Image (cartoon, rainbow, N blue to C red; front, top):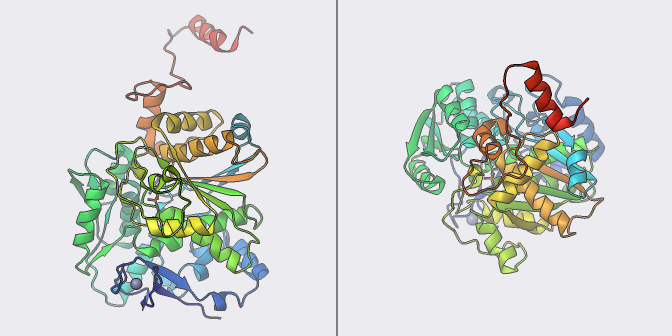
Length: 449
Ligand SMILES: *Cc1c(COP(=O)(O)O)cnc(C)c1O
Ligand SMILES: [Zn+2]
């Protein structure tokens, strides 16, 4: 059986292109492109056969099919030649049931999909493996691509540089100076990318990189490039797979540029269309209150998310959730389509709420990044309001590894985050180097033996 996918205009006009063409927007209407699969051909294989195929490859099988993304190649980029794949064994991340945390917030069936447990520490690896593999294939066919470039709030640049370094493809990353964590900045530096720090915010970097990629020899790696969505979509397929090919009741995800939220929706819609799951989950997109254009356009305005909602750009304020400090989300329309299809909701979280939610989850054994804190805070608020019910099964998408955001953690526990209280702080206790002092400290915390 041969499967094929191509670009189609996401706004419904009839523009189509091959995935090996250098094109990001519809030349007719300016809409973003979507990768469209031949669903009729995919439906020629039964749901049970797809499940068996994917289960047989999951974290095993010949390279690179053990990758969570490439194990689902037929649903991602079917006609790509395997020799073009640039993989870091991405995906296959843990889906954890977090019972202690769930009990604390009045729920019983909460899971965390640890998308940050991966090569560069964020879910961006899932999309970047597809994009860089596609570039590898285009270069092999003689397309003159000099470098791959992105604007980034930190994690995209880390993923792009790593995959490009593995393939020997030059990469250029544009970062807002002073607005990303040290761990994020050092990743592209270490991987040999050309790292450009611009005195602007993410939206400013995005404008420059879009202009830069008008020349076709600089290939654009931001998530307006829908190849990335295809890889990111596999996180939702893995969630269903890890739950025994069932959908949860809710998926909660932090959203900035809103590519990942649309990817998750796209994955569930494909699984439902092919009968691999029998129903769709409801989707919650959580934004930081400091950068909340989607929230303002929907929930705050009392308007349900539908494709006809207009998302007005805002000036994103500083937020601890730096990877979602985005005021003009490029994939807003895609996300609105996904939200409408998955009976979705848009929530927001303040800095205090996201910091406390992250600390609360950490106390139950996690090590959450601030963006995951935004999603958890949204869940806490939905649970408190009874929208999410006690027995509902919820999967929270954790987007990055907490170790990339150690400044945030240290700041919380030292109570030095400006303007924030730290009710759940657990600062280190300085004691004399003696048995007695250590015993006293233990007694003070845990009582006398
Ligand atoms: C990129 C990123 C997000 C936001 O994803 P979008 O697709 O831009 O909505 C959230 N969290 C982390 C850690 C990220 O790196
Ligand atoms: Zn179009």
